[in-house]
Amino acid sequence: MNAEEHLNSLLSLAGENELVEFKEAKKQFDFNKLGQYFSALSNEANLSNLPHAWLVFGVENKHNVVGTEYIASLARRNDLKREIAEKTTNRLTFINIHEVAHPQGRVLLFEIPAAPQGIPTAWNGHYFGRDGESLGPLNIEEIERIRTQNKAYDWSAAIVNGATLDDLDSTAIEQAKISYAKKNPKQADNLQHWDTKTFLNKAKLTINGAITRTAILLLGKPESSHWINPASTTITWILKDKDGIEKDYEHFSCPLLLSVNDIFNKVRNLKYRYMIEGTLFPEEVDQYDPY
Image (tube, rainbow, N blue to C red; front, side, top):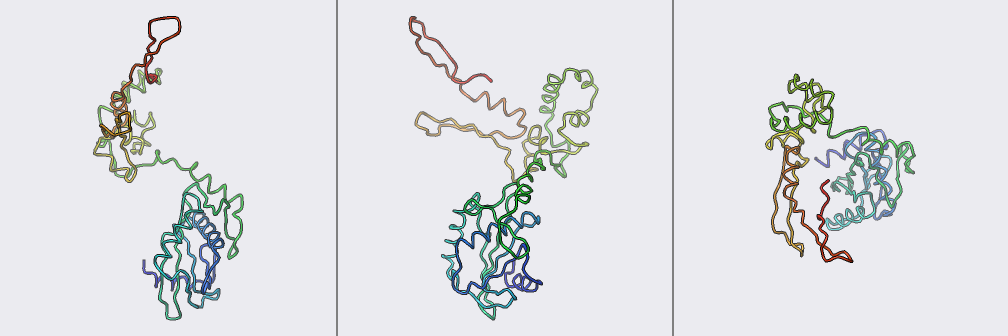
């Protein structure tokens, strides 16, 4: 991003709004107020379905550049990122702090990330928002609108564009049919007459024949895991000694429907023996229950 060009585009706006705030901040700016603006602009970006919002220092409300001496060094700007993260939800902080040498003075562009889906951004435990140019508490309707975002989105049910039945493992599909028949005994006879596409639709692993992320995770070939990047399809088994030192490990990937059994077989279920009062014969129990 060209910071100078972006500054010019912000200066060309008719005025401040929920996503853009201008401040003179010629020398200093109250840290707590800065955090409140961070929370407010982050939440408003989320509600507007935009990736970020902007806080601009060195510009007055009428869009005249006056310059700022606030956090002049790169080291101080990095410190500010850390200080903001220490008081926000999930340590959210500025994406970047852009410095622009404008002819009328130095300008800082604080690039503020949108609140994550389902998680409003708080500052010191309080949620802030904006009504036009005004800073204030985020109202309850907006808080709930952000919080319910994850409920409306099922990551696992998303369609994997470009994936086909060729990306699925035939052995895993057959195992899925066996499990489906056990779970739905009334459909066992019909299952014999279904082709693979029909079965996967019935099992809700595909949607109208389209491959979902769930289908890739449970039934995908190992080389098909790239379809759901950057999510990881790997489960790692690690063996450690009594001192916590790693002695062995193994990675397991798609199809997870089959891999979970391989992982289970790697778990060492040791026998524990203990004496019960009144007998010389020890009782034996497994370290883990078999379920």
